[in-house]
Image (tube, rainbow, N blue to C red):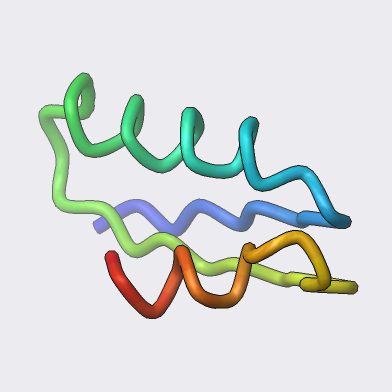
Length: 50
């Protein structure tokens, strides 16, 4: 398993792009860890949906 840490600071557009790209293109079993510093742009709601 590969662990991937994604830091985020109010950049929902790029966060969604990054998560979707990892899910689509990775052939390995991944653990995606998100560190959201500030989620005033809807980042936390996006993570809860996915």
